[in-house]
Image 1: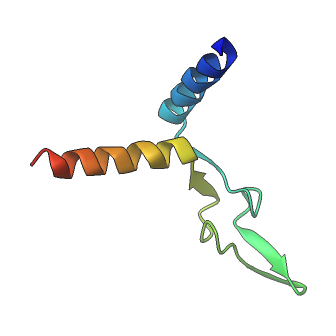
Image 2: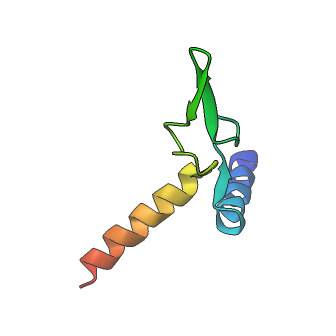
Image 3: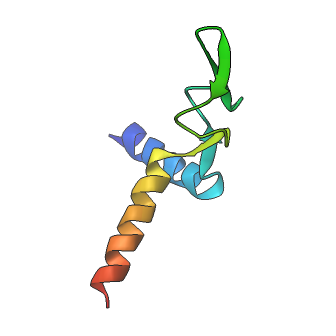
Length: 70
């Protein structure tokens, strides 16, 4: 139980300090090879980065909380 809490806290700190990570599909290159041709990565759209899952959840929570507080 303590390990799970420690992991959750460290992941929250990671999402706060570095909210983006390299794209998993293209490996942070921005392009993938399909049928011998290089194309823009469909997941990151060539930006080479993606938002972490925890950061996406935090952003959604902030958006919902902000709309509910009005």
